[in-house]
Image (cartoon, rainbow over all chains, first blue to last red; front, side):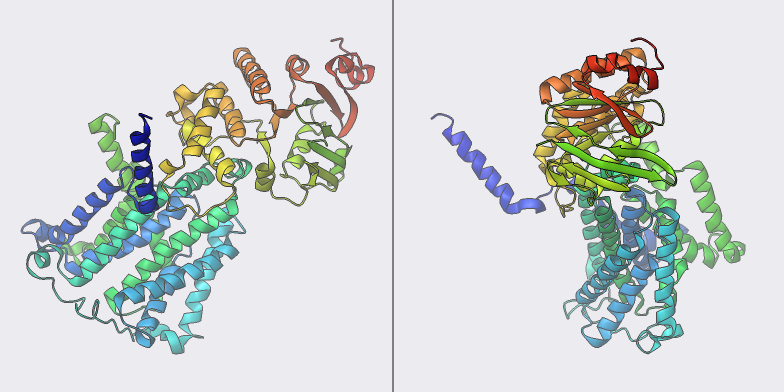
Length: 365
Length: 252
């Protein structure tokens, strides 16, 4: 009888755990999310407004927002490339597809930013399900070529046959983004100290979604899926022969990465109020591959860092910073950054950061 | 009812008949070894049973159910597990994760939607993985990366992965290939242990005659895709046709 109170309290704890269920934070989740929140909170200030440092960097608010948006895209892409080991060369389809869907949605249905993201993402997920279903029939280079071919088909479709909806070569110009919750104009500055730190409502909106995406990706990577994805990357045949349905897990990986691409593509429209036709072009697929590899595949934060470095060179260095004469050579600079990074740190910038951390802490986490 | 049956099983590669009208029956709790010279069709037979290859004709039944239309992962889910000839493991994952993946597939099926559930909450999976690693003697190395293990331990891990899938039938394709004599001995002990403790039914493909004769209840001899003899170790040892065809007339 003496152990009854103990067992009663045990039941209580498990009842609470059941109630919170899968949403309860586990392991390092609180630490990772809090750390990300702090960095997202300081980033635009340091980049665009801080005395001295922002002058050296020549950063600006709009670019800070854009880096997060591409960061989400690359983060999702890494689920597929870095964890599951599948190289897609057609992710422009989901980025651009979501952008068009969110844009058209804003014009025809509702300009609410949240609903636009939901609509664009839903479109990207459905498209990823379909294209994944068709492309994953083949592995390796054939898979890459199939995804490329499907994405180019979409590019062609929106460039002329569907031009009445998409605006063809001119891109989609009818984006009508409304205020957030009907009150806050996304382009207006946040009040008081928040305005100094974060800048605009748009940044706050994008940063909160980025934070949710990081938390979601971290959870996926620490779920059975994370383990199964890495198992498939390591040894596909063995994964099949322990009884895993490799094909369906790959499709899920593809759809999940399509989800992140959809969130990012929708935010891209809200950020730019415009969908360029190039958002479906194969160069967009190429850019996200480069960002992911540059930052470091198989890591949570590497791709976001890669997106930041890429966009920095594309937008700041190309404008003649730090030296005027390099402006026309920014593509060359980007190529050099990429080659040197991959030479010196094969696991990307984040891999290098991890090596340094291991060196300092003696290999302990 | 036999656990595994093949009926008039044929596999042709172009003009070559790799498996020629094989009728194999494995009863529950039985330990069957398949021996034969190189190219006798041993690996082909295993690959047919695990559904890596499609048979040209004939039927394969597991627990009375035909499996020729099943995918490999479905066959594993039904209870047929395989250990490979080479150490087929997840090299860049830890030893524990290697076992957990197999346990996950055994406990939660071939596919699920649990991408929002933290893996810490999968207690059943952790238990099976730990028990398996304990059984193959790798529990102390659980946190090492699999690629760091010596070759013999990689093969033990490979067998561990096959066991963590909680099979009813274990197919072992040359479990001691490429091992040193000490490692071979340790592996034979391991197989003996598994045989005693888990009461597992297994089919073994092996070159090493000493192992075959010591741990099999029954031996099937293949030559050029055909079964040329079948019987207890003693019967096979004394079979003149086997000695002639396979053992080259050398007296055992």
